[in-house]
Structures are given as structure tokens and as C-alpha cells.
Length: 237
Ligand SMILES: [Mg+2]
Image (cartoon, helix red, strand yellow):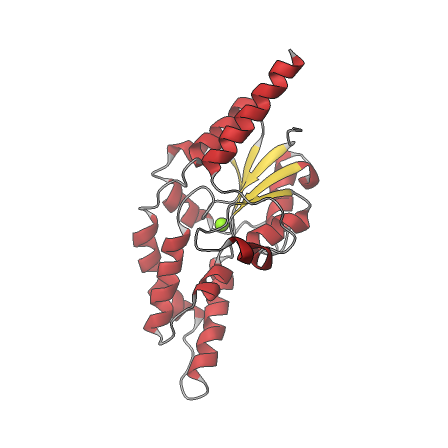
């Protein structure tokens, strides 16, 4: 197994188990304005910036409400959504195996960067209870001044690789969302996807076109990587 030049990590749904909480907050906010979101709609919001999600939810509300009722502004929608999200997100737990995966990267001496759609303030809120995430010092946030386009555009991963001084094509990217996987693929990374539990195997290819590496769990990935590396050392020895 050839090791990458660096590892680029998504945050929500990959390292922290926040996606059900984000989904709950969008669902409650949309319901407040009279529209329930389907499971596939919630999946399509994953991995995208707050403003991109708000624009999408407003478009769905516009479809449902028709001309008779005004669609809430982005500010009105977020005024309902943000307090719900913030109360939920501080309770987010690590994805099982995520601290161990960062530990493995550290032991291998692999540079790491965070490539997230979350804003700097949202990342601060979510990561505060998780000191193990401080292992990732290089970070690109969704509201980064140097970032032009959010996922599914490749910019987040390209900028993360650039900040580590490596080529994105020499990196492994870890993602959970269709938008994030597309972004990492377009950046040229070798993409590993941890899909949400509710997707059936036959749904994966449709939800994640072009992706071939699906992880069943981060714990199993770490066990595999450790076995590969110990094999490499013993072969070399
Ligand atoms: Mg994600």
C-alpha cells in the first residue's frame, strides 16, 4: 500500500456525528414554514455550506407555498434554524474510529487538514468538546476568505492541499456526503466515502457517482491500515 502525501478530512458526518443533528435542525426549520423534507432532500443538503442549504430549502418552500404565500428570507429561515442547530450540535459525538484514524495518521507522520463547509464559528462550537480534533491544525472553513465556491465545487480540497504544500492528487480525502465526495473527486483526490447508514448498497452508486471506495466503518479502516502497514514493515524487514 502506498501512503498518501496527506489526508484531507471532512468534519460533519465523517469525524463528528453531526449530520442527523443538522438534518433535524433543517427539518424543524422547514416544518416551521409548512414543508417537511424527505430523506433524499436531507441527504442532498449534507456537506454544503449553511447559505447554500438555506438557498435550497427556500427553493423547496417556494415550490410548496406557490404564489399565495411569501417565502421566508434567508435571515428569517436561519433565525429559526440556527438556535435549534446550536443547541443540538454541542452534544455531537465522535464518529466511531475517528479519533483512532487521526492517531494512525499522526503515527505515520502524515500531514492532515480539515476541508469543511462549516463556518469557523460553527467548527469552534462543535469541536470545543473534542480535544482530539486539535491534531488537525490546518483548516479550510466554509466561510474562509480564500474560498470561492463551496462543495460540490473542488475548491475546499484544493485549498486544503495547497495549505499543506502538497498536490491534491497525492492526497487521500475522507468524506460522507455526495456533495463532498464530488468535490474531493473533482479535486483529484483518492476519495474514501463513509456513507450514511440508511443507504442500501444498491443506492450507493446512484448517490455517489464515480466513487469506488466505500467504508463500512472508520474502525475497520484503521484496523486494515494498521495491518497493511505492519505487513509493509515486516516485508521490508
Ligand atoms: Mg460531511
